[in-house]
Length: 132
Image 1 (tube, rainbow, N blue to C red):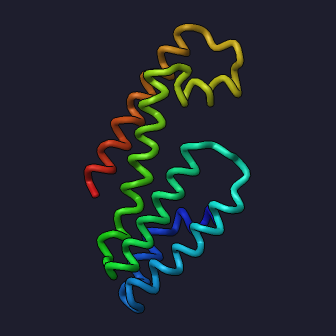
Image 2: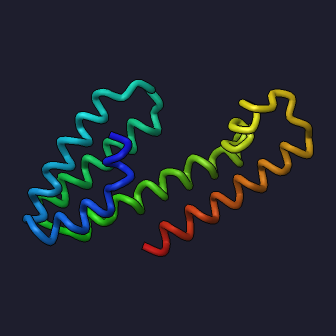
């Protein structure tokens, strides 16, 4: 399922050139629904993002809109931006959590560094969402 998620833009690009948009959206709807039902982690953000992606597929199928299908990567970038930015407001940051997996006793300079890296990722997610 992860492979399909990573290949999403390529699949959509080629699929809408060969079959109707509503068919592509319907297929993605089924895959996203299965993914949502089989997910192991019960994190609220993942759940709501999954529901939003499903709603986007339903809208794309209903409107037969390729633009709506191409909006999914933007949605993912905005979700990641929200996650990383929220961790800046309510520490520890996402990157600090990752760093503490390798270095549980992270020094204060490491915490500052991971905070700056989290800010850089926020900028990256903002720019990639804006660019689409």
